[in-house]
Image 1 (spheres, rainbow, N blue to C red):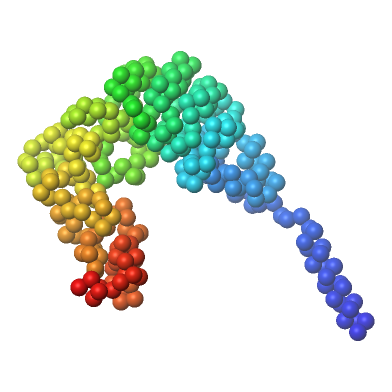
Image 2: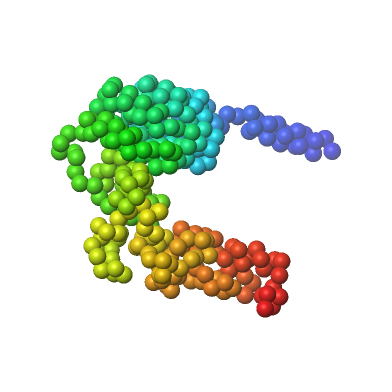
Length: 321
């Protein structure tokens, strides 16, 4: 009995020593990837251990490009944004706030005043911002430095032609004549994959422009076809905003009212794409490529859309008949 108690005591002390021992520091390769992590992952990494916390807080390099997306965007406030951007020590280059609905004009203005080297400002769907507040921030950046080169603000309410003209005027002052190259087309079906780098390659100063059809300030999309096959006219006639020219969610081609087909997700598809896509076994409607993850599989290995899958729990196909 004494030997067994001694053995249990020694094993217990060994476990306690292991628990009390300090963990080994992270591998050096982990510190090399910090500069490539989004803001949310950076903040999570700072909670892992002391060494990572110090590396995240003390190194300026990871904070030179602040890109805020889900899930942080819905919780970002002016105060939190100020704390995050202050880590760059005034050397912030890219500020991208994707759908950050709580950021106000005052918060954005404070950030740009302390970071005059911002060359890319992306604030799409930041609905608390006003055109006057955005214009004030752009003017501040253009007056303090000649760095700002691209501006993305699709989703800002009440933007008028006068605001767009003033923004473009201030931005063009920062560009040399050799940098003002022709703009590349933007296709509707590729809008979800447009990144900061792709937008830079398209040489677009501002993502919005005046729609040639309704003359409103909106995103203007080009037709991906060199010649519209349904109307047999050049693609310039098929250029306009989504309100003026309906487009296929899958291929971005313009759609006439007689050719439009509705998908299970509610998006509009052209007849050609509608025929090619897999369809729900119940309602015979397809999903566009933006919503392929919405498919459900029944016990019979049949494709079901979300609506039909939810309805199947309340009634059967024979009940409908």
